[in-house]
Amino acid sequence: GKLDFSTAEARQAENVRKMLLAMVDDIRVILVKLADRLHNMRTLQHLPPDRQQAIARETAEIYAPLAHRLGMSKIRGELEDLAFRYLEPEAFREVQESLESKRRVSKAFLDEVTSTIERKMKEHDIAATVEARIKRIYSVHQKLRRQRITLDQVYDLLAVRILTNSVKDCYGALGVIHNLWRPVPGR
Image (cartoon, rainbow, N blue to C red):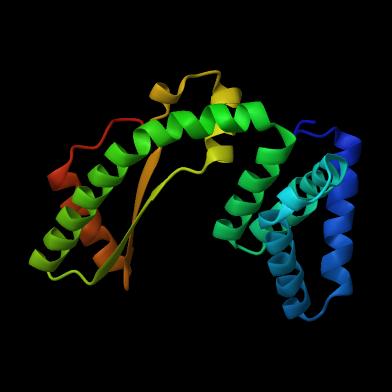
């Protein structure tokens, strides 16, 4: 089974999402459903393969997009990765192994970059929170497939986010970053 689905199925999933949101005037019900689904996906290995496939497909088509729509990107990411593991196990393992081989180096690099940014923000009296992450397995897979490229060609495998309290500090942070690293034109 693939994570892609035809337009008829896409419309159906979209209708289910709309219906769910319309039925629920209390967002807490949806949050509990998402938490329940995340727990189910984390323990999916205990079910027979046909149930795994069905639940994973429903997760990819309905629950992950719902989490995305609610701005819950960490939950969406984990739901997508878990669904991907069951729907396309070979592709999942391939991307996972490639990422794992890069993860240690990437983690060390991100730690270094993060501490450099934090130090520079303090030097310039900019109150900022710095977050760093490595792209998730399913989103890497999508990018590789969409752009027909190899993992070595994915330039945004790592991401750093700097949160500030004001527009002024945001531009100040951007200036600091551009002084540290020259921007790549067109990117």
